[in-house]
Length: 431
Image 1 (spheres, helix red, strand yellow):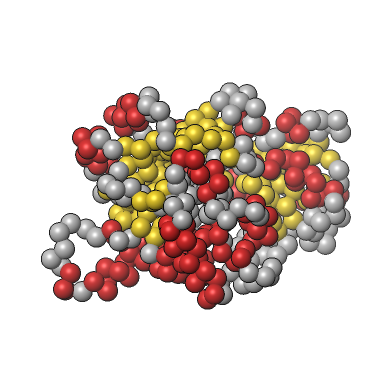
Image 2 (image 1 turned 60 degrees about the vertical axis):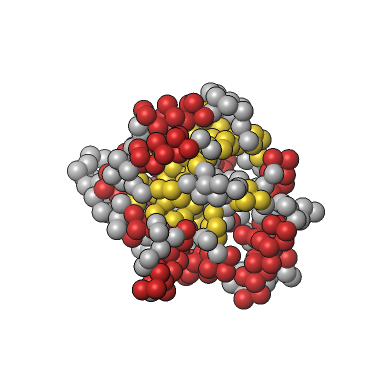
């Protein structure tokens, strides 16, 4: 892996909580408008600039992109974002506090290195993906990078963990952090250190050069967009710039790289609007062809009805929870895609029984990140909005690595990583 330090553009310590935001793609325009209300320093004014227009304004309107540029200029002019004078790496830690339902009662922290990742490592497949991207979403993010001449938000990478990098990070984090705060509304703690020691920076670069591959955990569209803009700039450069000493900044993009043994993947669940013309009884009978079906007691707690292991699912229908266990022979343990629970459920329930062929386009299905809990599945069915809900056991990091290494692509809506990266802690400018 070729990485480089960069002159990060960051908020002053006392403004970081006002400036930082959730990623652009985890909330809609109205939610962002509400979170940014009364706060001109919120990064939403740059990453979701439609909030400064009339409700309902198309986020792809040319005026919206132009407003992002003006807001970025304003943030720098006002001193809400300030560029470091020298190139640096950074350490970014995310902590799930002990009182968070995702913690299991024990505080958990993951430590990432913030770097400039090389465009060619993505284009040539050393930065590996496990999801397909949509061209329209790529183009939107590419346009955002083009007009701002910056990566406003990082992508989330995993690398095969190394003890030498663990030791460097441990040494850095023994010092006082630059930022340390708990962010609303999720309640995760975000801590950030600046690495300015030149020998440490050199050593990190050298160690990454020994790592054969990294894996996109979250941010496939941002990765594709950043690499796309970098490739455009390389093609525009022409022969006149071949004398450039070293690689230009636009050949790198903003990434936070975590060791694979620290990451937590949570479930990504499904809700469906109807039973494809079946009664509830007929639907349950159809499921019994491929699954062992057991009904939970009516007073079972939500924590008790969660899927217990791979190939075990939880179904909510007609006010009752059911346990579904895929029967032997219904999947292939030697197929990295076929063994996934998203594949099993898609083939044997969503497609075979409910007639849902394309998870990306079918309007009868929706997806719910596990951070919302099984209570959200129950609520959407009980409200009458949806007819049935299906909870899945989360995939493992090793499954993601195996699939990416094999050149395969996961089915849509397979992985949900938490905590999400906080945007606005550092920005990477392409010049």
